[in-house]
Length: 354
Ligand code: NAD
Ligand code: ZN
Image 1 (spheres, rainbow, N blue to C red):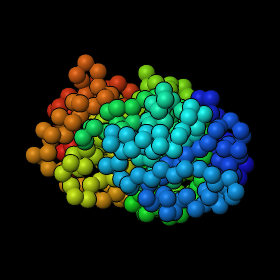
Image 2 (spheres, rainbow, N blue to C red):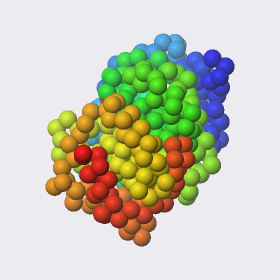
Image 3 (cartoon, rainbow, N blue to C red):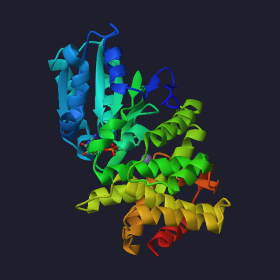
């Protein structure tokens, strides 16, 4: 569709139409000595064949594969990627293609941005979350223990290729994980988009919806690449959501997906917005209804509060030791830099729990 034009980001393009053909064009441009493809076990199985088909005779790449899951986003796997690049003889004119979800793009982006002081990389995101969020904006990173994204760089990819067809093999739970970020995009800056999403079947977002979310995220990061001001809008739901996600990673056998945790965070932070920044009660109820009907209920117990608050206190987004939230003035309008007291935060957790 001609409504899905290539988007321009900070000196790179985000391709949508026939995205895999664009990948091939990109590696054939003569700029690179060779290229490497980073996958996890699932994307090697489900996504790599589609790319290989497009590459045809050009499939002279070396493959680096990591285990699937957040556990791979750590320094040991990063060392593994660096060593493979060394063993394969990667030089400064090598290109790394990150074919996978947010774990692959964050780890691959970080490994590439530090290898020989930085080699070029591109993202071919294969999860909804990575298409609408992780692949755009230039944040790379790895975790230490359970502290997410604590080590990383701001390094822009040389291009992003968004192939909608990859979503066909993505499990339903992973689709819904990405949907949370799309709903967030509507809530923070586009009430029409929120209204469209809340009336749609979000078990199967359309290509146009993916495009619209990427366009919103791209617009925000273009205006504020290093998160000095308006990029903080994207943190709506993430102060509390990240804490719940981390808690769940540590304590639950079947831990919450990023989107499931962010949905909880958005409900709590919508409550804070109702208390602090003018979100109306009707809007709070609407947000709560939409999110609770889409995502499974997660039991937040009072005895979890201390640990959740401890995690929030370590949040990168804090300044001067205060816990900081992005809230909403109304649906479609964000409000950054709101300091929240522990009492307010606990009250918002109780709002969700009830
Ligand atoms: P993920 O990369 O772990 O992918 C989720 C699961 O889906 C994995 O098991 C993966 O193997 C599988 N998978 C991927 N593509 C598939 C496909 N097409 N078909 C079938 N299975 C497929 O996780 P994610 O949800 O994509 O990303 C989460 C990560 O992204 C987190 O580490 C988060 O911190 C990071 N993130 C980064 C940014 C950023 O700005 N850099 C933004 C948001 C999230
Ligand atoms: Zn997120």
